[in-house]
Length: 248
Ligand code: G3P
Ligand code: CA
Image (cartoon, rainbow, N blue to C red; front, top):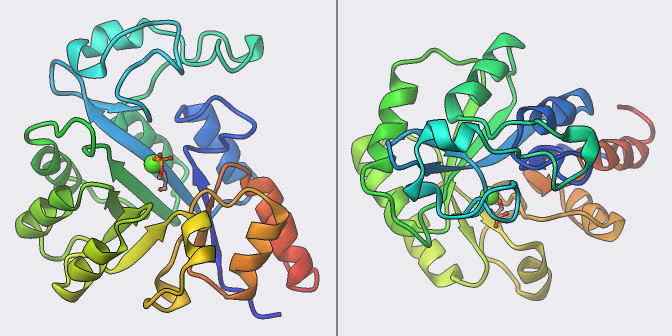
């Protein structure tokens, strides 16, 4: 079966490693993921912090909002211990650390950076991210995404060539408007949503999340979607290979 669907690791190999950490990203790549998805926030001193939530409570041994802490304070936190004792001592990475890791291994896949601005819209995050990447030569394909359409519009104004994708759970109408105005190229919808709604965009423009069950992976592979965003990249690579008739 012809399956071109790429496998993007959601917060790294989140099912098997502490999410959004260097070990999680490295594991995903070792497992054969062709893409990495991650989330960025601003610390109090305007440093790029890689974390999913707006607070450090769920994934570290600390408490409080990222925006109220300096990078130095965040670096003292343990981002592995809540996942398991084995990962005790794992640090919260900065965006630069993740990018350095990807550049070191010459990662040529997708780097999907979600601007986490839908709950706290950090002033200046879009421009700061743009300027950071503008000063770099990187080997991967950078795709920005956000649940906050405003962030994508800001980015688009700064850099009309930026490759952007609209994330959504239910706001498909707004996604359509952004597509029409050429702000976004592709969509990252919730897999539950996509299975329940006929969608106007062709499968080659869809990268649903979070595609973890065999059934959902098969659903996306059979439709040859652009990518799946999954917590289990290793499983997805294996299943895709089987569906391709064992040809990788
Ligand atoms: O990129 C898709 C996915 O990351 C969006 O949801 O909440 O995991 O950031 P969330
Ligand atoms: Ca995300």
